Amino acid sequence: MSASRRPGRRFPGPELWSRALEIRNSWLSHALSTEPADRPAAEAAITRLYELAGASPPSFEWVPSPAAATEVVAPGQALSLGGDLPVEARLATLVTSLRERLDQRIGSWHDRRRRVDRPPPDPLEFSLRTLLNNGLGPALRRSIRDSVAGALRGELTTRAGLHWDGQQEAHWIALYDLHRQVDGVRFEPADGVQLDLWATLARSCGWWWPREDVCVIAERPLVVRTERVDDDYGLVRLHHETGPAVAFPDGWTVHAWHGTRVPSWVIDAPTAERIIAERNVEVRRCAIERVGWPAFVAEAGFELLDRAEDPGNPGSELRLYDGPSTRLLLVVNGSVERDGTRRHYGLRVPAEIDHSLDAAGWTYGLSGAQYARLRRRT
Image (cartoon, rainbow, N blue to C red; front, side, top):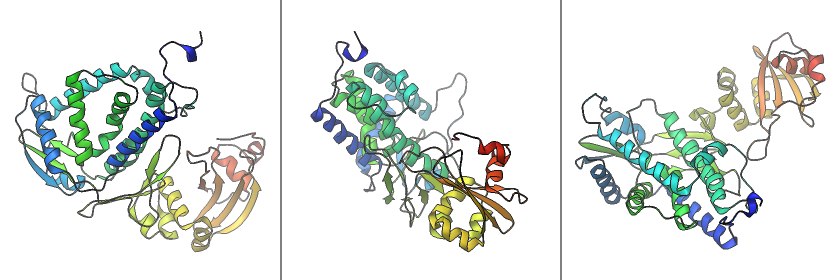
């Protein structure tokens, strides 16, 4: 009997799959919400989690952004042998144990981890459970945890110890909710109640820092701007061409260009001088894409020295430019991005190189003649 015909496998019909997408959209909406926090709901849920962790209810301090929270939250207590664990460590144990039990119920934790970076499965060829674990689940994780929460974390200049991401915990909560509502998985009553507490927090507030006597909670952002990367599983990433991709009530912002976190000048005031001085190749690429290669080359005073078809990337062209204090090879990425496009890259090469094939070969440690014999690069 083939794997696709095993007894008990459930395949999603149009109505079931439509329901799954509806729930996915709802949780993604919560993760990206810019509505004011529901303070009573958030405080009640956190108080109950404190109780489950064996801690006394805290007082609450609300701040306008995660950056503001790092300025007022007390650092976590150091772990000590023979003493009680700090409340944040007990909460971490609580949620880790919960997720381990829930993972056992949905039956594919190891499979999800192994397949997270593989292409999404065809909805017509896989069971509903596989689609949830290996399709919708990873897409939510990349959209929420990696793109949005990851950008916020990267923008923080200071850290204040263990915290939870509030609305951006929605990626893992959504997966269990999908199994519960669409796949018919039943969790133990106490686990379902605790899952609902985390779900309440994802629907009601931003990041939060639990400490022994006080819990610091950040408001949700005023602005979250994303772009859709694929339609099958609703993968999104942060992006805004003319302003911050995320903005909080106190003015703290995060800028992003097609999913890459960038300094604000890349969006607000990109210039050839700033681009040339930028050491980070990804930031430099984003800034050039922001102004466009023709505008950048003209403003920077680059002159085209040589051009040739790229033998390592059929259908693309290599262009070698000479500019102020640098020589630049413009290439097209050999791999297709998630959105189906191919990125352009400007690579600095030695000033003595005069031909584009020689410049391309130099980036691989080859001569131009050796590079010309390549069949395909990535």
